[in-house]
Length: 115
Image (cartoon, rainbow, N blue to C red):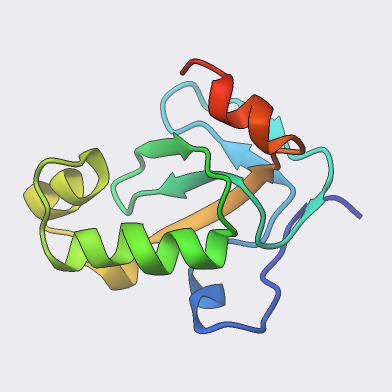
């Protein structure tokens, strides 16, 4: 079995989209998720208006979403791209959805890899 699945152990699990594909909103292409993931590191945030934000973190997704993304959306921190978009597009934090698409196996490599 491959794809993203909520682990169902945390209240953030309601933000995890279950599935084995990522659908690109403009090209229509489908991208397969090639492994089994729950709450690990590389992720796609899917906006209600169809935009995608690809992020990477060395934190567990449950911690990243709770500590950073959700709180910055609630506080309307307009200096960061996700809360800025949510605020200007009229979205709210309950509309935040994500899929995990990969993991970082080497913390040092993740910290040294340029974006």
